[in-house]
Image (cartoon, rainbow, N blue to C red; front, side, top):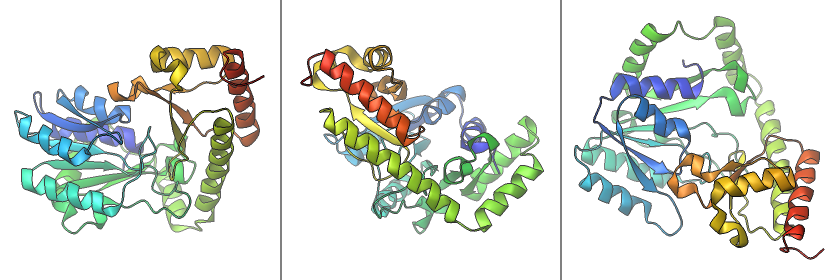
Length: 300
């Protein structure tokens, strides 16, 4: 049991990594996937994630070109920030590669239930033999709307589970028992609440995607997660994600996360989080349309 996924991820890396170890992480990635390893003293090798790159070819190339040999790979699908989804065949290849090169795999399945349009997010634990090399984190923050409760868990490789349990015995006293009881009730109870939460995110996704496309912003509608990963419109591309996010805040009164915050390869994008209700999202779309009209991108 962990105090949310972030605490578990950070402590697992402290328990298993040493200074000079190499960790492979997709770029862009959720920050703790990167900085958990950095805090532990490890070196990061970023694997670019984009439609123009063969991910596994880059992964193999990086493994062969790294010295010392990478010790760990860290993934999180459906992805924060990109909302990228994978099928079970992806994890089958990951497990085979990990066994071939004797590399540990950490998977963060935070958005397991926040899925749309019939998509089902696979678990790496569905792959036969995955427990030989892998662990997987789950958090109740998203599926059960319990972000502030800070409760989750890790399953998988017994040695890695034992390593996390040991370091946690030194760093914390565990999760408050009533929270653990509440988590058990959530996991074992009626799951209609999960469906309702997912439906709410889907309505928000639909409103935002429709509004952005109407504004002339070419975005993909995600199959999972609570994010829209939007490429910076061409007329603003040279600004970079940080300056473009600042302009959205000042001109449109809309707050987004600049892609550079998730890795160098994220700088051509910004991340929208589906955390506001549909009315507020429509308000945000109006602000973006007004900005684009003022800048000559839309007809008045």
